[in-house]
Image 1 (tube, rainbow, N blue to C red):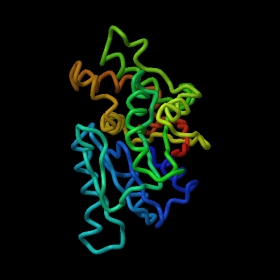
Image 2 (image 1 turned 45 degrees about the horizontal axis):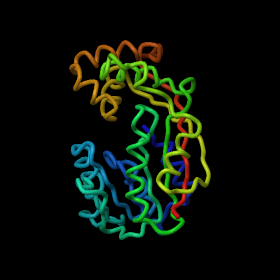
Image 3 (image 1 turned 120 degrees about the horizontal axis):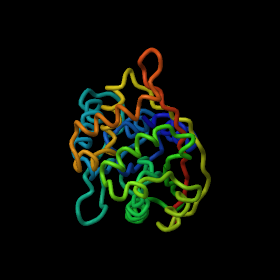
Length: 253
């Protein structure tokens, strides 16, 4: 869903054969695959959802087996004792990405700061570190559906459990991790789906609704998501949700 963000960042930073990329929260590996297709050597870390890490391995390993030219990738769960990774893209890394957008829950910025603090020593001095945040709610139609996730996950605190990313959130996260902000940008990133069922399935795959499913049940989440999506269903049955995301480029000390 964030393909336009990946493309904008990679183009701006001229990701290519000289890039050694460490992707934090790499998920199913799409961003890594796009970087590898540009010639980058990539390493991915994903600890939240092991099944997505397995999908990333499927996406990134066939090319090596078939003999096509693509840098190898190391994919790891990160372990329980901190972030220690090594592999085809041996540290120091020249680029660190954290493409999972902050601004969905009140505590996600804290978790990202800690993750970046662990990753920064693995990168070379002055390496770019990229963070992403949701844009203003009036420009992110998906925010109304995310509020459903917050309400179902914690009904007693739903008014405070989701908020949009604020203007300086990304800068604050970077500074807490000892990074120096060095530029930013905004990218239009609409979410489009063939129908409502596809939209529900796609949004569930992001992991943003895991807590809601755990607190209630999948059928209830499905029902309320379907209702929240109705304003974005077009005459032909497709679902179109315009969004804007902001990214920050920071530098290691």
